[in-house]
Length: 420
Ligand SMILES: Cc1cc2nc3c(=O)[nH]c(=O)nc-3n(C[C@H](O)[C@H](O)[C@H](O)COP(=O)(O)OP(=O)(O)OC[C@H]3O[C@@H](n4cnc5c(N)ncnc54)[C@H](O)[C@@H]3O)c2cc1C
Image (cartoon, rainbow, N blue to C red):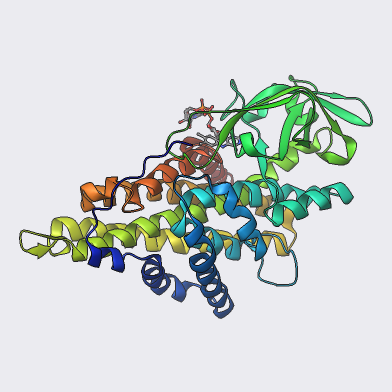
C-alpha cells in the first residue's frame, strides 16, 4: 500500500497538548452530561483500551484490518447486539464505541462498522444454525472480515430494482451479478449479498444470503477510492456462485424485508462514526488555535477564528443530543419488539435518516472548516484533520446518499397531512 507520510513540523508543545488522551479529555467533558453512569464507565474503559492497545499499533502506512483482532479481544468489534458476559450492548453503547474509535482512527471505525454492524447485525437478527454461529464468532472476535453487497453498477440509490440474479436450486442458491463499492470487499471472508429471482418483482423475490471467500466464481477487485487508503472498497463479481441453504438469511421475498429493517441500525452506527469524526476535528481545532500564535496572539483571540468554531461546537452539541436520542429510539423499538408495528418502525426509520443526514453532513462541514481555520498544518499528516475529512465524505454517501435520507424524511413528514 502506498501512503504518503511526511516530516513532522508541529511545534513540540502543541503536539504534546494534541495527544489523543487530551482530545478524549475535552470530548468527555461535553459527552458525560448526556450519558448514564454505566455508559460513562464503559466509555472510560473503552478509551483506556484504545489508547493502550490500538493507538501504539496504528500505522498510517498499513491497512486497518490488522487492528480487528485487537478490538475483538474485548468485544469491541460491535456493541449493538448482546454477545458474551457483559450487559453493555445496545445502540447507545454502539454509538459510544463508534465515537471513541473514530476519534482515534476514523478509517478503522468505518471498516469496523461494516463488519461489526452492517454485516453482523443481520446474522444476529435473522441467522439460524451452527454455520451462522461459527461465522458470527469469527467476525466478533475480529478474526474474519465481513461486508455487504447491495449496490450495483446501474442501481445505487434505486437499490430495490437490483439485477443480481438468483436461481433457487433447492439445497442451494446460485448468484449471478456484479456488486460495486463493497466496503472491506477485497479482503473480506464473508459477503452478505442480495439478489432477485425475478427482476420485474424485486420485493417479492429478493433473497439475502452469505457467500464465502473461496467459493468458485466469487471474484473481488479493488476500486481506487483515494480518500480512505487504509480501507479497501471493491467490485464483487458473482459468476454462478453457489450458496448453500444453511447460509440463507432471507428466503424469497424475506430478503427485501431484511434489507430494509437492517438499514436503521446501519444509519445509527454511521451517526456515531460521523459524530466521532466531528468531535475529533472540532477539539483538535480548539486546542491548536488556542496555542498557535500569529501577529503576537493565539489564533483563537481573533473572532474570525473563534466564532466559526463556536458555531461548530453549538451545532455539534445539538447533533450529539439528537444522535443519542435516535439510539434510544432504536433501543426502544428493539426492547418493545415493535418490528410488527409499522407506525413505530416507520417513525424510527425516518428519524434515523434525518439524523444520519444531519450528523454526516456536519462532520464533513466541521472537518473542512476546521482545516481552513488551522491553516497549512491541517493538510499534513501531523494533524488528523485531513484524514477525518476523507472519511467524513464517505460517511455521507454510505448507507444511502444525502438525498435519499431526505427523501425518506420527506415521505414520513408528508404522512402527517393524513392526520388532518
Ligand atoms: C466509499 C463508499 C463505500 C460504500 N460502501 C458500500 C457497501 O459496503 N455496500 C454497498 O452495497 N454499497 C456501498 N456504497 C454505495 C453507496 O451506498 C452508493 O454509492 C449510494 O447508495 C448512492 O448510489 P450511487 O453511487 O449509484 O449514486 P446514484 O444513485 O446514481 O445517485 C447520484 C446522486 O443522485 C442523487 N439521487 C438519486 N436518486 C435520487 C432521487 N430520487 N431524488 C433525489 N436525488 C437522487 C443521489 O442522492 C446522489 O446525490 C459505498 C459507496 C462509497 C462511495
